[in-house]
Amino acid sequence: MQTEGPSRTALHAAAARAAHLIVDGEPVVFRDPFAYALLGECAEHYVRAHRETAGHPVLAGLRAAVVTRSRYTEDRLAGAVRRGVRQYVILGAGLDTYACRSAPGPVEVFEVDHPGTQHWKREAIARVGLPAPPCLTYVPADMEAGECPVDRLVAHGFDLARPAFASWLGVTVYLTREAVARTLAGLGRLAPGSEIVMDHLLPEALRGPRARAYAETLMPLVAESGEPWLTFLSPREAADLLEEHGFEVVEQAPECDAAGAVLRDRADALAGSGISVITHARRRA
Image (cartoon, rainbow, N blue to C red):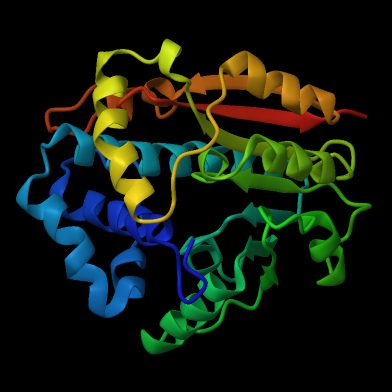
């Protein structure tokens, strides 16, 4: 990824959240009112393609993937908060705006990401006049380089003795399988009752026609930009990795089903590609 500023992946994900509110109809799957503003001068550059060809299956699939995984995750986070969880870890946070949207909220948010992305984001928040969220702690880490996110979290005030909720969205495909396993091994140190939601792209043999077309279009583009897809996991492989490191799977939801009727029953072009699965797991006692 780029070492200065956010990755292109983070920019495209923020643009997808922004474009969803511009080009897609009702019902809204996920509402992020800050995504467009945080993109700053490059906002229209990244959103323009969605405006001009909102119905293109790859662009519609990208928007669907981003807003669906965000909706699914924050719905499960809300359930964890009702059960008393007060720590939220966002691995590979990119330009996530939960801390801004929920402030002052009941949870302390820890955003783990590359320091270049975090520096750019902090400047963007200041540029658009948003107050720095009082509940947000930035935790710089490079998971691919072998830094343990849990060690970094503890160094920044995270309490390992208390349960936490962690999200890991749009990241595993850009890491090696070894880095994915290493990160999950670290997360296995979280307190019993902690939860994680992660998404993962399916291997070629498990993709339907729409997912194959989506991958054939995007894979060369992301590779050319320096952020190639590296790791694909079947639902069983993802479950095995989680179980190996102390988690039990609560649910595995295909991308197209994860948001329920708000994604399935639509009159517009928004539709999942079917290339990803979202897995929700809980740390065993």
